[in-house]
Image (tube, rainbow, N blue to C red):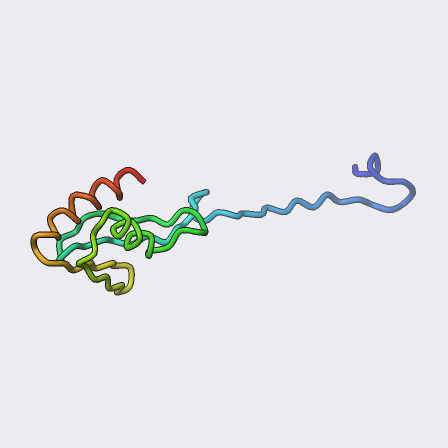
Length: 101
């Protein structure tokens, strides 16, 4: 049966290797973080590229001129605290940032 692929008496049996680089039917898993500002859920940050980190959110806020805030990472929750005046603007800004990315 497989003698067409061999010479002499050596038998050749094809070996097929099913290599899966993906989990769950091809879906890649990425780290993601739920973002809260003063305990209000704002959105989810999914880290897609290797160079991305949860600190990108903090860096984004600083680049937008926000200075009066603190960040705390608990598991997959990024909790941002700020005074009530700036918190409203941070929420608006992050809502756009997290939905565009």
